[in-house]
Length: 180
Image (cartoon, rainbow, N blue to C red):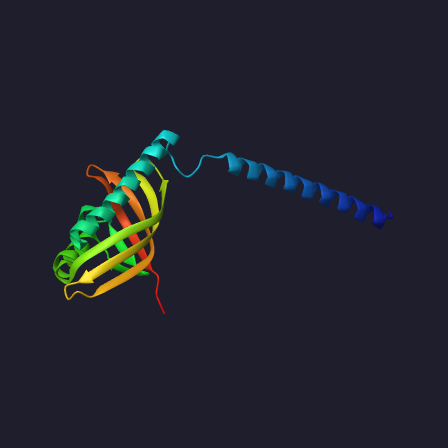
């Protein structure tokens, strides 16, 4: 039996063309489904608005409290739980709430006379009714007990958690812009 190779090649090309069309249709369907699926948030629009507004109010309050009370004010906003942690420029500085409380109470309050904190471009992404991702640019001015002032800025990210005590920072990360 003799096989006509040109016909076999044409059939293979047609078969591959059908496979390519089927793949293209599948990709289009997957893309369409992905674009119409539920967003990351497991909340309703009304709940998203409430979460954004209440977390934004927490961020505004943090700024006012820190500017008025200094570093001890942070303790009102760090979640007092074993899972709290804070990172600064890629270094774990507080592995838990107790470490943060001890350092703030025993070191920072003795060395900082005053400080101010301002947020810019605050972004809040609700994850659920009790959790939200927060990010913002920040500017901070710290005056030590000798009167020396240092101004810094950078970017802040955190996971905010609402519990019985209101919104708190479940974890936080600061990235400071280094100046040459």
